[in-house]
Image (cartoon, rainbow, N blue to C red; front, side, top):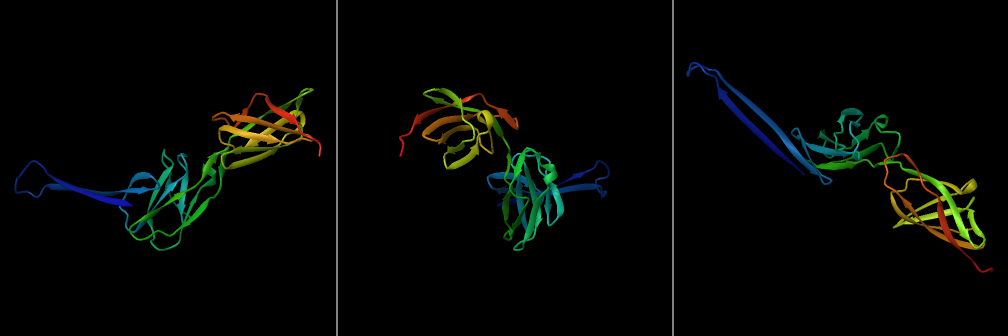
Length: 219
């Protein structure tokens, strides 16, 4: 959705009242609303695309391989000159995206209707990785959980990883919060909660994690 506005005015310079020394100014623009975002732009002759790259600023955006501009501090850019009822390629410059961000797609094809527009969102997510040591609390004492398969669950998301020597583990692409974790070494069942802190660091070292384990009956 978009709204077009215009304004004009004039001023008479001091001097001969009959003289032709009046000056005028005029301006026009538009406000666009798409994807929950409101953005100002120049008049829209046909259709528009509102591009969003998360919150990344200064990312180059291309329309049909021609640079259309750079995103602002909100990660937005309006492309006001898009052809209606036609295939328009909208892409972003990967070199403008920090290395610690995951890029799911670099290009989208949009077909906006006449007098309207579309919202093109590029899912750029900061990669947050965590590492630590996993130990198990067993009847004979604590022991590092080496080379075991871990399943993390948070809502509908499930992530998997395998521990290494000494119980060392590494997991990425996991949003902060509490994850329920299960593992199944031979003849025991273990559960623990993995709390991942909110952080701006690309890699965060966690303190030692201790899983509570219970022996399983033999088949």
